[in-house]
Image (cartoon, rainbow, N blue to C red; front, side, top):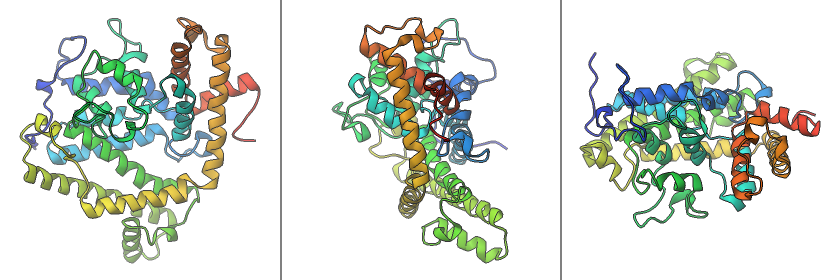
Length: 398
């Protein structure tokens, strides 16, 4: 069956190319090649043992960064196909969006940002860019993966413009400014930080919201942080649960959970496709350049679904992310990150041999960034192993 292509879709034949020109890859488009490189890189494999919400030891069935990323990619590809967008680019961006995350999820990120504040701070989105353009060292001709302009642009801007038209930091960067990793990169390779990214990048961003909201319901129920009955008054989740119980009043608990979660996800995906299609008819973007030049995102929830999604996020924030069980583990995780950072900053010889090479402990800011890169790349398991090696302590489980 022939698929239609939207007028505002990214087209691989029109790609702005790579920093280091390469020959075509036969049947693969440039965006498909980007996707494949991301899947095969070391940072992607490390997502297997990085926290989504629960540290890896807490159970084999909870999401990790890797399983979450795969789920985001599946949602992104489905939405991109329905909207006539480039599926490979949407999938590549979904697969890359969490590469820069630290061990122990957002708790590790917040602690590393605090520790790095005197040296430019830490931002997982900027770290993803740093990984893909510098830290992955696999190819003879260049550092990083040498991805297309469109993939790098979408990675950096998938949540919207980073600066306003005057060049002032916007959104979450308004308070502390743009991360150095992004500023350093765009000084030589302009990613047009003032504009929106492609529709494919916007699809990847909203797919992230859909995946973690729906599946955190599943993980929260599985962990016993809240019960099915608690979903009754939560918009979207409550309606989905009500439908399941009406259709299957005697359904066992685990099946009821799955039926509820899949209805939540299906409702959000359907709403995005319908609302974005309606926006495209109303705003009439005739090219990907027109999408970048818009004053608002093209890919979005409808007003009612957007409000329901916010209320669902609020419920999860209060009932799951701030649950005393989660906060206790994450507090210990933050102490692990701090202890490792302090140890490596005080004694470079504690770093592995390959990380000692090229270290500049006499240049504090530069060395701190190297220590930061090392810790940010750790899995939960490796961070705990290094902590035990250095301090003979098991901080999370005793």
